[in-house]
Length: 137
Image (cartoon, rainbow, N blue to C red; front, side, top):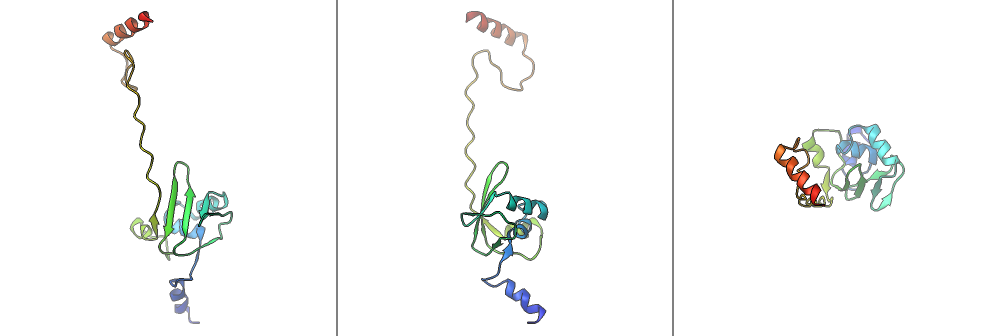
């Protein structure tokens, strides 16, 4: 088979790519070694199966569930990619199926005499209100 035919074969439906390379190409991780560590740490599932090896192959149509530090990514592989390109190119490698972040909880209204966090030092008026509030209890 000529060398040019291998490139065409990699674009076919049966083609696959190592999960660590795909994570790096898709810019999920900053380096390939970090992608390998993520794959071997057990924080990645391919089609609901937990993987423990960075050599696991992914194909177009596979769904990856990735547990990161502060969020969970659910990515459907749309393409395998040939290089680690710019963000616009990397974004075309997957379809983001991640759940939306939970809504932020509204903080309860401040108690009488309680100030907003980070509002600085209390004024003389604030101190008088605090003293009055504390003496009532």
